[in-house]
Image (tube, rainbow, N blue to C red):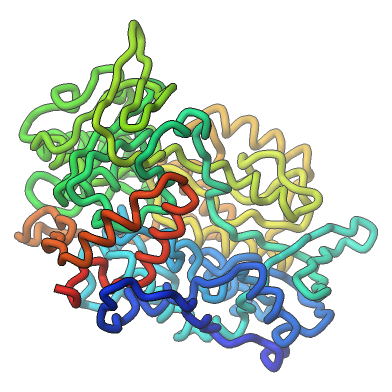
Length: 551
């Protein structure tokens, strides 16, 4: 708390960039979201602001990198124990991925709000069962404000390097403008994901339509009336396909046959009761029981049929519903049931100006009359991000008790979790475990003992990783070690609300002449960089992406 005199404000607003108005000039429009207007520069803005925010040299007991859900929870638990700490956030605002412009509008959390709860923070009574991204943003902001966590966060503070001095048993962390921080411990809370994966650009070079990565998708409006092909079968492709299919787009999903491991689940049981499938440490809530509920919900959503009636058998998952990653989208299941999405098994290997050639077991095929391609092939692991600034850095995302690396002393790798568990749940476990380790209450074993634990638990856990929390017995064991508390997380009994079981994406109004002109002339360009620049400008300009003020 002695650092508050040098702490940056909670939010540092960046000015919106100047732009030439299209003709005819539209009326002035309010921002789509005031938080997203802050997404401006990166290195230029960050380095320019650093000198006034941090003293040239600081010493703290613990330094946390990242101010998303896990970083904020960690800051709270460290302060609750009276441990001197600060949080470094590279962006101009707190909130992590939830407050990023990369979060597309149709996103809703995959768990009921009763399973997605921050420490000592209730959801507002009017919050829907499955909150939107805007609900989550406000929730995170209120959590930080109520617990005065903004006092601990330095925004616009990208970490350039973090090196461990073994002789002094100290981390030396360098930020911009020669600012350095010494810390006994470092907590890295930069999330599950590394950099986006991109397909071979040579495959798409001949294609004359739009090509954007799923991380650049925001809303369906630019694709209205177009034939869009999504490449990959995962959470992003499923959610984007459901959004597009209900908005007047022709949607084809092209997936490799090895992408078929994961089930696609709805948020509600057939009777309208919200599903609660996340791990909570209650060993009586068995894996088989939760899988049975999930299977019944899928069949009910598909009108009593199974997935093999709607997609190639080679893409139908073979394992149990909860044995893979979390993919939740009743809008996709509805679109699949109603024939609004075509799913094809194959691997794209060539494009022409408006088609995609793909191969599959036993032959080749072509998808014709394609207007846009959205690769949804995921991200590199968190290891790739850690290696950019940490020395030593972890060699794997398989970690002792899901958060400590035998390769890296006095460090917590926080917020890396997979399977059916909510982000705030494992963020709570990791932040508590880190605070206890920093305080000395939790004494870690030797590096060799950590490696032995990792080898044993990776082999028997879901997804062949130590960091899948799906199984309640495993979750309870990790929770007991990290928090010192073996009791399960209290589960709220939910009832059917009697409301419709789906929240369809908001309908697009017919575009005004100006909107149609914008889409036809400004988005139809030959190179991908121009598409991305125009799309980013459009998404940052028009309120709610509806062109409503222009009609």
